[in-house]
Length: 291
Image 1 (tube, rainbow, N blue to C red):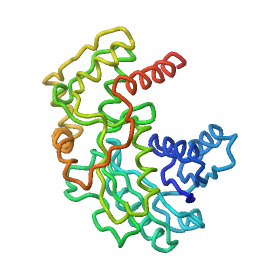
Image 2 (cartoon, rainbow, N blue to C red):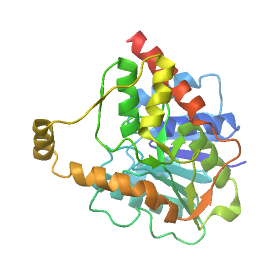
Image 3 (tube, helix red, strand yellow):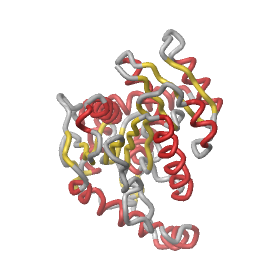
Image 4 (cartoon, rainbow, N blue to C red):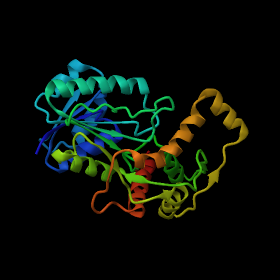
């Protein structure tokens, strides 16, 4: 078994991957710029001797290199949520790639559907030799996958509020439960033959947002309500975020285009949408009621 480093371990997906790795008895270096999130990770896995936390910026090569000592595989995820800054991602890519080359570690990148409108090529389009792997993912859902369109909609269901229709809720696309995503990433990273290639993860098949929200509604025992965005709201959205419509249009296109990105990979026994949504909603309800 290898020793892993998770860059941006404080993110929802990073935390889920750390959990997956420790569960597989993998020694993990969790790297994040947030001491608060690292402390939370340390507390969550206090009974395990496999976790070491390191505070440092993802774009800082000196900090990264020191943390990567003895590491076999470096994991990081980008554009899995809509709040990723493209310039920050590019700086991180350069830093992580150079550290992987300097340390001899392999690099695994998980890329989501929220790439910016001005970026035409995948962030990690140049793969040096057979030491890197690029994995494309459908939109993630689950307790650990926040700052996504589907998470926003699920949160409204939990709060008993109407869901604003930012996208066409009848369009069917693939979604992937975050725990399945981390399991698939670990499976691929454990296969030497998977490196040097692009991979495309598959969920449980095409489903519409409306169908997912119906499943969520059955958990809270309340049918979801939809609310169109009015003309004034649309004008304000265009004023404060001029690229908002382009980002949403690109998001919808990428849901279909992901099928052209690499070799398809579907793990064994994927979580059904019914089971995944139920687990997500119950976790969100517990947190909402506690707050």
